[in-house]
Image 1 (tube, protein in one colour):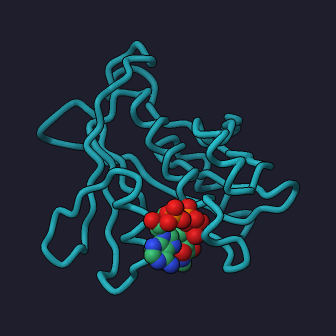
Image 2: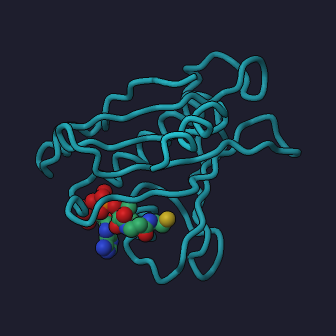
Length: 161
Ligand SMILES: CC(C)(COP(=O)(O)OP(=O)(O)OC[C@H]1O[C@@H](n2cnc3c(N)ncnc32)[C@H](O)[C@@H]1OP(=O)(O)O)[C@@H](O)C(=O)NCCC(=O)NCCS
């Protein structure tokens, strides 16, 4: 990661960055951007990129990153999160399906999570301050058993501009 580019990215409050940790080691990340809309005042999040280090795959980090993003968006009244993928990427498609996304196109190129707001934010998306914050998610519990115990996902520590 280029530190300068990352700082500039985090300055834009529409951008979200989540990092998954296995103890002190960063093992995965997700980034997304809130898009402006013409048809609704409710937010729309584009999950632009997600990656977990090969050594840390199939241990629930990808799922926790997605779930953290979904919580973040629900709490802010977003209407949906969408992601584009290569239909041959079975790991990505499996991850999106197993976390509740539905394919929007026949060839599984686009997956959409339709969200119901938790109303926690207490403000209308699009009004007042920008709805997004930049997050670092930390998770030290990497075991599969731990994942079940910790269904709520990683604690998120807001950082940012
Ligand atoms: C896609 C990716 C982020 C998944 O991360 P991960 O931490 O391994 O995923 P998880 O362990 O949380 O898996 C969650 C679910 O996704 C599905 N899944 C994950 N990897 C899978 C694979 N290789 N094949 C099929 N399904 C898979 C499963 O349903 C899995 O649940 P289960 O383990 O209970 O069966 C990871 O494989 C990766 O970094 N790939 C390279 C980058 C990439 O392709 N990113 C997506 C496009 S930008």
